[in-house]
Image (cartoon, rainbow, N blue to C red; front, top):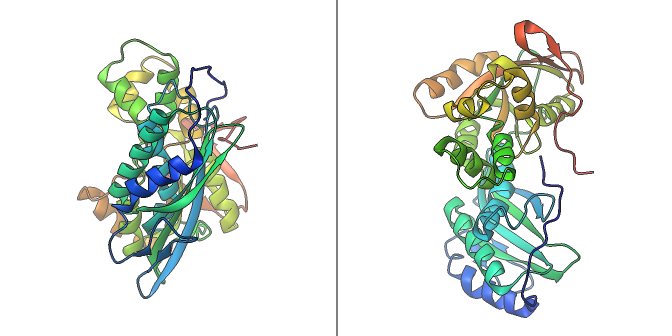
Length: 343
């Protein structure tokens, strides 16, 4: 689920690289205090102090114009925040806590005000997730893009990989996957007015929420046998999980949780066709995870007490690499496209 058309806009003379670095240094240095960061922006490298008995997690994610965002549909502050949120979502998927971020900017026809607003949005999001921006890079490029490298930590023995699913495990998803896909459709309609339900779905696309707290909670209680964040669609990311695990899996579309706002947007449209779109759309950053039978009751207690929002949507099978999706009345569904691929 990505934008595919380039929009023309008017821009001022591009920023100077040194100017951006100096601005970022002044702006972000205020947030690099604390015992985790020994040295922030201004040297050849940043220096971090991970906690004793922890492993370091590292992941990177890029937002590129005309692929992941259009400047006339998203505010620069929101694009900055989304850069951070998508990067730390990978940390959440392994049950970790973000430590710090590196931000690399490939500049192309962006004015001072726009870049300044982007940096403010990224900085605010970094503070909210507890991971200061401690360095990065700036370069001229043929297209505008932002790459955030997230560094995190997880206690040894508590990391959750995507490769741990085994036959008999239950498959769960947090939140309401597919809302971002619905939000993008609404956003690209470019209406002058939207209903409150439509606005919330649009917000889910523009500013997804990384499930850091839920990921840590699950990992600390050693509930998941495998976990992955849904960036490219439930079905595609589930396929990645079963392939990494050497197992098979099945999903029931009628078990996919649908919020009241999504129901209003779906209206009288074919529920199954909309559900197919919702599980292949991507950019929800919910957590897809598996649970051994012996630990499922532990998870259900968390769900019933409201500590986590998760729904069982399938099972892991022993048929290696085989993904089955069932629709109405248990009829098998075949998708031509399972999710977003970057090439």
